[in-house]
Amino acid sequence: MPGVPGAMNFRDIGGLPAGDRVTRSGVLFRSGNLARLGDEGRAGLRELGIRRIVDLRDDDEVVREPSLIEGLDIEVRRAPLFLGSVASFFTEDISLEAMYRALVDDSSARITEVVRAVLGDQPVLVHCTVGKDRTGVTVAIMLAAAGVDRSAVVADYARTETLLPAAHTARVVAGLRHLHPEARHLEELATRSPAPVMTGLLDDLATRFGSPADYLRAHGIADDELTELRRVIVGP
Image (tube, rainbow, N blue to C red; front, side, top):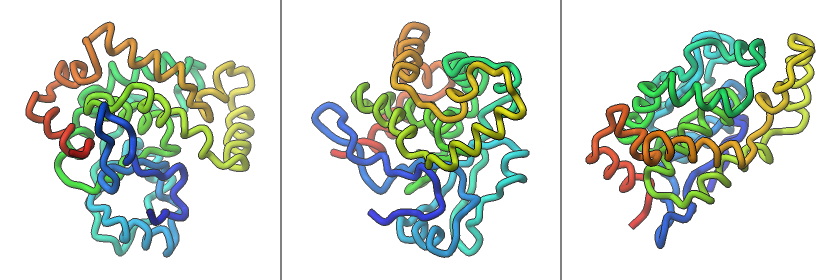
């Protein structure tokens, strides 16, 4: 599969086990922001046939690091997933678990928007700034609701930590530490994607709603949409 130079943490969700089937390749992609794409990166998106991008960042992030996709015939949908700014999580020094609980509780309407955007056109790319938290949680919920094996959902989330460039991570942590010298959860919030955190989130959704699919149902996704999500994501 062709890569996308300049798009950090970019990957296809294809090939994940879903019972006796696997997820389709070339349908749903995930990544960090597209603010460092050059000609090769834009050519990569074009070669993959990406038709829709779903950007989960807030307005400030988009202004600060605009997507460099000029010249591409790609529809962009905005679905900002945090009610407050990203910086507020470092100021409040909350844990990754608490951030994810806030995300699924406070941004449920936007998560359903993302699901419908994925259903509406493919191939589709879902991204935020790093592709770790907002993208990680939203993609995990969609994969789980589509019937992807739980262990594969968790492993796909955890894989992000291995794909973040060390030099970039060091710069981000140093900058944030200067702003928030006492923050206990800073490195975890900025750079980690621990498997137990995603396991805990899936457990929480199961406890409170029944399953990730039931979480989506509770927030407006209909059964026929869930059926279509499974068809889109999981191969025959």
